[in-house]
Image 1 (tube, rainbow, N blue to C red):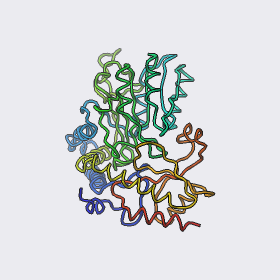
Image 2: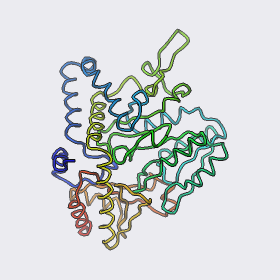
Image 3: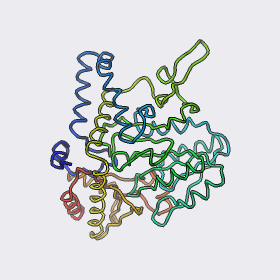
Image 4: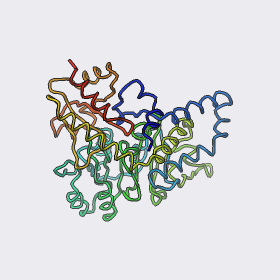
Amino acid sequence: MNFENIRKETLGLENLIHFNSAGSSLPPRCVTDTVVNYLVQEGQVGGYEQFEIEANRLEFVYDQISQLINANREEIALMESATRAWISLFYSLEWKKGQVILTSQTDYASNFISYLQLQKEKGVILEVLPQSKHGETCLQSLENRLQKGDVKLVSLSHIPTNGGLIQPVEQVGALTQKYNCLFLLDACQSVGQCPTDVQKIQCDFLTATGRKYLRGPRGTGFLYVKKKHFSWLNPFSLDLFSANLTSKNSYEVRQDARMFESWESSPALRLGLGQACEYASKLGIENTFEKIKQLGNFLRQELQQVNGIEIHDLGKEKGGIVSFTLKNKDSLKVKKELSQRKVNVSVSYKTSTFFDMEVRGLGDILRASVHYYNTEEEVLSFIETLKGLP
């Protein structure tokens, strides 16, 4: 891994310290060039015409994604975001009264809203699993609950938005397979950050975004659907791409994951997403994840030396998302002050992981998320900037 070249290929690093990859990473030049060049060509020859010219390259995006997560190309649907992918799948599972959803305390608030909506409208039962002493989902509690046989879905966020925790998803997948239960994995913070192999995880469905650790363009994401589920899934929204009219009174749904896609899309952004997947694969996720973990741990270590800073990360194994607060300082105000000094961080609002924040008595917290293109020198500079805030 040529670290010097990686830094040169990331234009924003010339002007700032970017510790906001959990929000939106800085893309490599090849991704932005791909998107811009397509749009320029589209303006010169026409939208439909450019799509036809690039048809083969657009099809190859499915291969690039499937290679990244060890899936088959027909199991991939390209979406506008991870949320769009998650919602499209979740609401298509044909829910019935009394069916049980198991989730974790650290699941994303957007997902909780969907659970609660179905609880209200369909009468499904939502249960939050206990945590281990480190904050991960308690595997023994999960197995004890699955043994009852009434759970339809286990739905987890692989890496929560508000801290370094990494869920033991391979062990969870093994349990859901053992007890014949569906497993939906929200991987919006993990794809691009840590190895995410759907064969090892044994999840039935996975959703991801392009803009976070994958370093793709905003407005992109994808959905993985295990092939064995194609025949019974019932997408809640269909159009002339996801289904075909077979007579005046009948239609036929596609028998691949693209049953969840719509006809209209952004080819430029999709090509950028494919380029980001290829870039990540060439570097090697295992290699880059080691760098991310090392930097995340180094940042936690340095933050612990600063008076008035409290770190709020959970997990036995931690990734590159570091959450903390400054005593007697408003997190949003600190974020703005850092931005004025060319340092990008984010705020994890209490509402974004409401259940976890409420249980732990937390309000809005700061989130600094490092990537493999960051350096220890940037971490030390960040620490000095924090110390110098008024």
